[in-house]
Image (tube, rainbow, N blue to C red; front, side):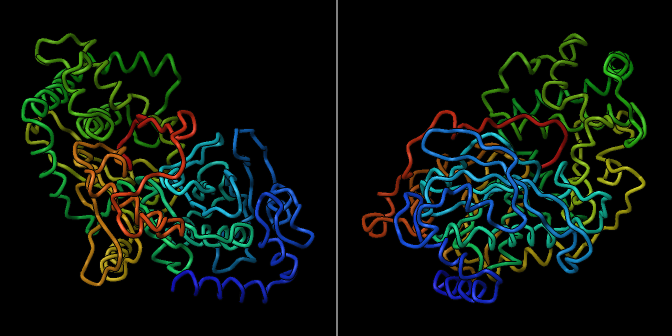
Length: 486
């Protein structure tokens, strides 16, 4: 039903669009040139660049695909499109117009190198990736920060989908991890008729920004008691030794030219890095990593160098410098206006060692950018998901702190699922689920994409990714990013 409705909608859009006849013809042929009409033999690059507002940055070769880095003209304000535009980077990993398409965003900058997300491998399809608005270079100049919100970003995706759907007429699935998983969810909420399915990975759902006890419960039970004690001891020791380790920090700052205008002082930045330590470990590491030399087993008797190296490797002492914060200003702005941000307690550290606690997003955004929190934004998203989720899959990680406040489904949800990968961190995926859930999730993704075989439709246990694993294309290291953010 969803697909049929969208087909009618797409036809109506084409009929009402100038030049629709030529676009409609272009939508028919597959990439191999089959079909009829002048577009049947047109190169996919020419067809992409024929879209009004689309321009080519570069094309990079990859066997079996065409990979394009593009810029697309977007309105700064989708409610008032005549009030200025900006160029938004997107990429297209093109396989064949007869295959389904996966719409991916990480919620931050877009990678300009060919890569394939898990749903793209599962359905053996094309992939469109979007850079989130206000992440450089996809930022209006001058930047009106009031136009950075979840609806405007969802509307960016909607316009890209409308522009590319005639070229890629088969089913579409949106996906993303962490902030990208949140983005895919918000997109579905505001434009529920665009996608045929949603796969949201490790997407936090901070419904009530003032109530964060779920995170405290998470850190009280995650992993093993031995590992928790070991990490807590290192974190505490880094604050006990604040004076000598700050001297080391000052040397780093002088050598690198770091500044602290946004956060306010080196001392504030130092504590913020240290307080991220335990969270950062569980976000990016596994329980087995707790036994590595990176985590001193006896923190009290460890050298200053051992404590420094452990905290710097896991949290990153450059994180809260002006230079470290600048790239992520759009994230902290959104965390402080709509998304919310966690606050956790540190029962293993005496109060005399903590001067600032978990600092709010406002402290990480330049003061000349105004911010006002909207407490209803996430509540409305949460309510919509619980009551309207349809063809949605949420994949969480058992040991991922961001999964402590997950999306949940209500009785009115349809063909939607929330699964948790055992022992997984922020890199949790479908492949890491228990076999029954992995097979069901794979089968549903194939079905939503319109490429499930009769065997898979009859028995989800038969579901397998349609494309073989590609070591270069499919490898996504759970890249350690300093700072506490999804």
